[in-house]
Image 1 (cartoon, rainbow, N blue to C red):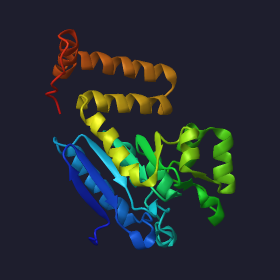
Image 2 (image 1 turned 30 degrees about the vertical axis):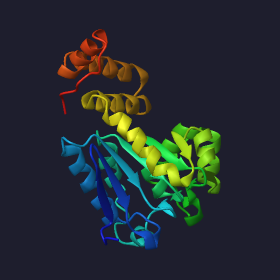
Image 3 (image 1 turned 90 degrees about the vertical axis):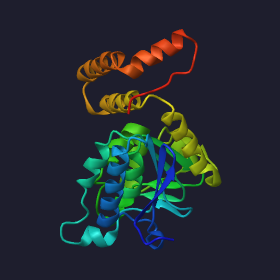
Length: 251
């Protein structure tokens, strides 16, 4: 196994990023976050790549923030999550084992979550006299609702993968040995769509959580009209009318 914090694997139009701090259960250090973001930004700039899958190992997706970095001067660079949230690249989290604290916040920063049925997801920061600091209180509440979020944030309650799926936090729940395969299946389906439309769709859905309704509707309408004028937008309509598969030409 490489000593790199993040291992990038090539699957054609899909990049798989493996968090690689197994001795620390993939705890998120400043160095790991920096390496992860650098890799994702490079993948986003690569015209041959359409989707990225983030995963860990069978024991942990990421067990939380590295406590050593939390206690160091300057602490964990939470601002790095802003760069993650601003990515246009579609992201899928493939979660086995633990996804706790910053690990769950990292998973929730992805656009789709595939979880093992026996995974453990939680925000246990309250046990350290802290609260989630990288979007946990906000993204979790939007996903599972106030009651469950309060239990998880105030009491440190964990969800199993199957419960996370039932409560709308995860997109799919499968046995642990099928998690990465399912994530790659979803990534492959996304990669077959028009790239520009996929990225516009991601932005529009995120706007639903981040903007008031009226501005979000106006942004959606503008994106729709813009896509109508693109080569791929015209190709999609032509292919439908001609009863054939579209051939996308845009990045």
